[in-house]
Picture 1 (cartoon, rainbow, N blue to C red):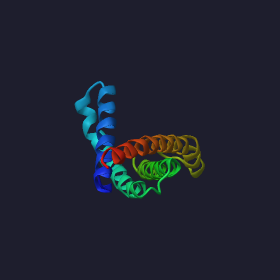
Picture 2: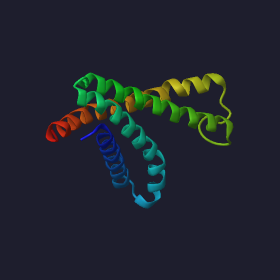
Picture 3: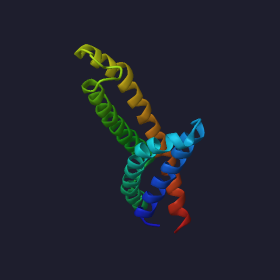
Picture 4: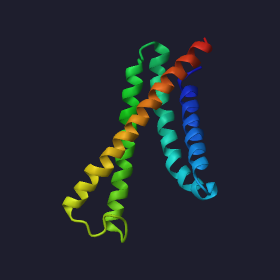
Length: 145
């Protein structure tokens, strides 16, 4: 099993698990499906890419659990910050949202009390994903030798 297969598998697993979770929790799954796909497809592509990069190290025996956990946290945090930046900028400039007519201090307070803590939680979820994928990928590589 090469690193691209591992990356593709991890991306598909991420898409299916989170899409299934979102659809099961929604009262009307057909309404939430487009929004979930809009968010989850880029995330799954990122997971697939990073997993293929890390799988190369895992195949060579250079990867550690700590590397997977830190990489998962880092990239999930970065993706979350990008999401919040795009949503805050549209809320500040558009007519609507909690930041309509907000001054600079209110935007900073929103970032420190909502955006940053949520991004840290998303980073922790990414770290857990990294740990799960470390063990899953180690098992896949061992089983296919």
